[in-house]
Image (tube, rainbow, N blue to C red; front, side, top):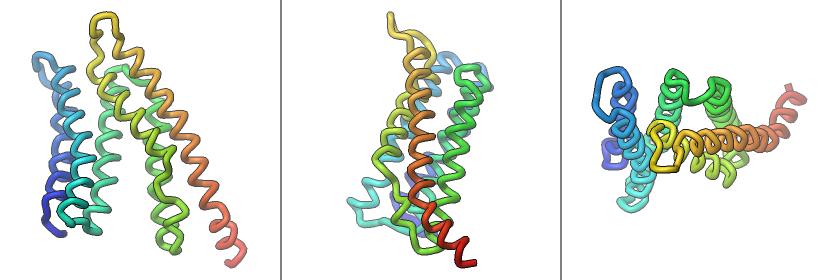
Length: 187
């Protein structure tokens, strides 16, 4: 495991996960705001570690593995917490978390057979991620900001993210299907 600055930033993101979840299990003033800030800082480190890896020429295979794992852990922890707080429907959380597991497994299989490029991250997947990363902090914050309902906007955005999750998963499955048929016919 190479120790470098981008990997350290990724580890910090992973360590922030129990912190933002734990805020809801202790009596802390302004817990919604505090959890939102911690999640947002963790989300920003997702961008930061990639930028640092490129800027400092410290990209590594371990970092390429750890970064998406940290992202999935962060989103899954936030969604499970939001389900527990009754701010997100369990079906939405299952769709998003299930897709992440399925696509990760699909990418692993495609990489193993030398076809990783056909299931590379798509633009649609990036839009899904942006929608998710705006929705989650709004849902964590939960309180109104004047006339602005963070819960209502966050709920709409998480529904959009869930829809994009299904569509992008279909895109990845469609890209992998020819390889699956070829492998099935060859065995």
